[in-house]
Length: 391
Image (cartoon, rainbow, N blue to C red; front, top):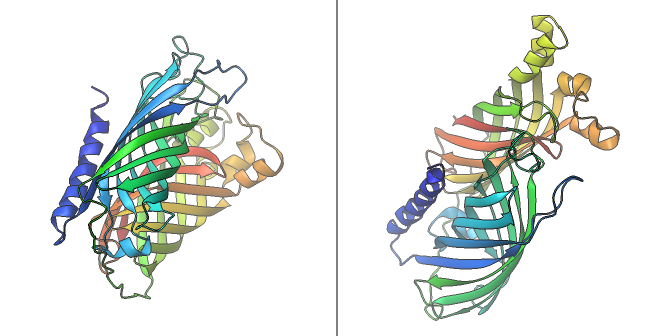
């Protein structure tokens, strides 16, 4: 069954949370939540059918940070865990959606107050039962593949008493496949939920929070990255039904841990689009060397990592030093002029998750694997998997 990978990810998250809990000397504060509510897929193009209200149901499990890891105190002792989401989209051309997502929940109001205001955010993966098909489902210009990215942000108000918390939330979802398969406009969904959470530790029981002191390491450390991604050539809407082509990248950076939870890096990435190369050879009739050169890129970047044990959320802002294809041939399918077109030809960004072999803020050799969405300005360009070595 195609949904098995979603539940496999959920059980991996559960295993990581409980493995960490078993290593603690004090009683870990674990929680389980059930929530449900309405949402609506927003109209994104003129020929899109009118959408009906959807219903979303979610289950969360996780742990409240207690200071047993260095990053807990730096992020103000958040809750962290995994969410399993089911959405009855109530629209035949979209079908239903299943999703799995690791998340963080920050308390915006003091922890010892019964009335809580929280903000939660996460990145994960989703599976849509219906996607675009030229004959069977031509109305779906939002989702071009079964598997997509799932990004969420929610504001939550709740009341905590004894082992329970009741809450209501408002937020938004975004689903897209990172330009791996066209069309890829993506689905944006404002939503609201009500729910209940059960904690294994009562709120009237004092839970000690330690704070491990971080020994600041001021040295800069070298990183090397190898990556490969998948890219569909075209704009978000056309051409439909085309192939996806690999993108190969390599990079080098110097990084520094600013704190136990925050790392910065500066570096260079270079890469090659096999799809662009094929287009230039077959359609533009360029010589092989010239086609290869025009299908390559070089980017200088500034990276930031939010570090949580062995997991990091990574964001990257890049200036494209060399990007000839977009500048010379980018308007073949995606005619964009003005400020947006100019910025897309000089700016690229990455957002994703990394999983490290060892605790991130430890010195010495380390390595990580990551999944990212790479974008030109605000438009997704390809989805990517990477291996990074920390020397």
